Every structure is written in C-alpha cells, then in structure tokens.
Image 1 (cartoon, rainbow, N blue to C red):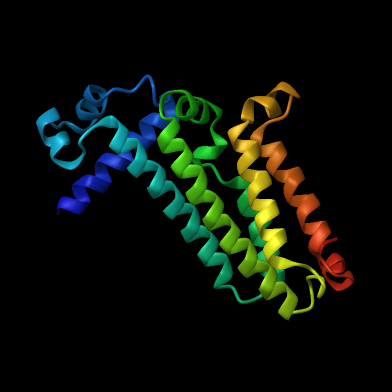
Image 2 (image 1 turned 90 degrees about the vertical axis):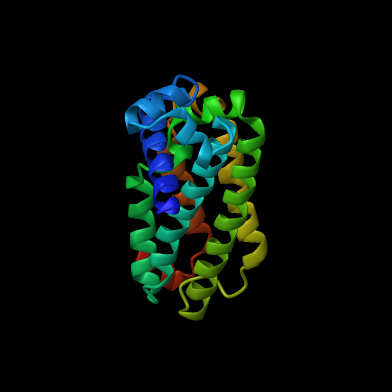
Length: 199
C-alpha cells in the first residue's frame, strides 16, 4: 500500500512535470492534484529534490524495461527494427523534453548528473548486449570492439542531451538528433549481411 501511494505520487508528479516543467510545479500543486495534504506527501518524500531524484530513477527503470523487452526477442532482425521504431516514437523519456532538461540542469544539477550517469551505464550495457547478439548472428562486424563502441555511442548520446541547447541552436530537435545518430551508429557496426537487412 505504501509503495502504491509512493508510485502514485511519482506518476502524478511526472505527468505534471512533463506537461508544465519541473520548476513551475510546486509540492502544493502536486498535493492538490492528488487530493492529499502536504503532511501526507512528506511521509513519502523529504523534499521536492528527493521526488525529482526518484522520478528520474523511475524513468531510467522505464526505459530499461523497454530495452529488456527488445533483448527478449532473441532475433537481431526484429531487435533492430523495433529498436529504431522505439527511438523514433518514445515520448516518455525525460531526455526528449527540452524544458525538463533545462529545468534539471539549472535547478537540480546533482540529480541530473546522477541521472546522466545512470542512463549512461544502463544504455552502454544494453548496446553491448545488442551488439553481442548481432555478432553471434553474423549481422554485426566480427572485428568490432564491442566495449569501446558501446561506451562511445552511450557517451555521445548522453553528452548531446546534456548540451541540448547546442543541438537546438542548429535548428535540430532531440528527435532529429536521435534518428540521425542511430542511423550513423547502425551503419557503422553492421556487417555486409547486416547492411542488407538494414537497407
């Protein structure tokens, strides 16, 4: 019951943050939306800072769940197809919402740094697993340094999110960046057989 209430607060706050930004939503606003007192809120969270940290952790868990589903396909062809579709259609990733990234960087830098590191480690792990599966099936180049490639791509992606303003300054959206980065990455790791599949 306690976990249910905690998750309900995170879910409701997340919906409000996605819609309005983090800075403009107060604990009072969240409590009003939930129909609960601030006293009850503080039973579950010491502060808004803690709520933001837990929300970010939950966001990583959500993305991890999606990545895990792809690994469970056990078919690299399906994995690539669904991975690309997921990257293009994902709406619930905090990193896809410029206002949230801006608020996090400016008002919650410690939580954002922890979030970035958790995203980086998680993303690197799944990319490594995807590439290993692709190598086993002959779709990824046999001579590819998987550990280095996974580290490099995860770092590029996370650095781009941290410097989202630089991407937007060139007239690009996070969606456009992710799509282009994914295309370059996929083409760079595939074998001839893999390229036939991708094309």
